[in-house]
Image (cartoon, rainbow, N blue to C red; front, top):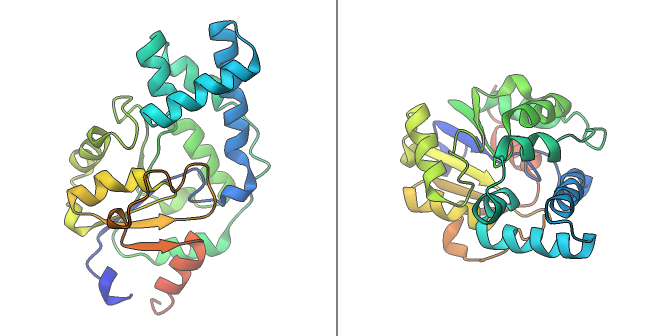
Amino acid sequence: MQPRFAHIRDWIFDLDNCLYPASTGLFSLIDERMGAYIARLLDCDPIEAKRVQKSHFRTHGTTLAGLMKSHEIDPDHFLEDVHDIPLDRVGRDDRLAAALAKLPGRRFVFTNGAAPYARRVLEAIGVGDQFDDLHDIRASAYRPKPDPHGYELLCQRFGIDPADALLADDMIQNLAPAKALGMTTIWVDNGSELGSHNHDEAHYDLRITSLAEWLETLTKDIP
């Protein structure tokens, strides 16, 4: 273990476009279902639905947060609908599983998605048994990253000391609240949409392109 990470006791990972490469295009399927949901909700064409969707995403962190504020939708109905996608685009990642298994301390998933979907993805990647627990959008009181409230609830729920915790995420803006709390932050820069939005080097300690590759290097000396 590299000295700069030797103090980490809680390892926290984003899910989409982080535990699997953005190049799989899995999140684009969710993106399509969100557009269709908005088109039905507002009775508008796909172009207008896409505009509304992206506006909410940029302004509120997630499309769901924007729709809850502007249209008071049922968040559970929305989550069940947009996450109803096939997972054949993601495959097992044995290298990631092996590296995660070597990490000292606890491992968590912190996602703006819903727990049932997150567990399906983790099983598809083959890392479901490598995590102690997960913290989803419901556990964050439907206040998505980068809203600081979800980070505070995460730490309270699992007794995490931010000074001894690390967060890896593909979006820089999601790292900012973690850095403010005192966490070590890793930007997984692998081409996800708006990954560099609100770019500020002060928000991350390390920039990587592949989580599996970095973790494998990090844990190579651990039996």
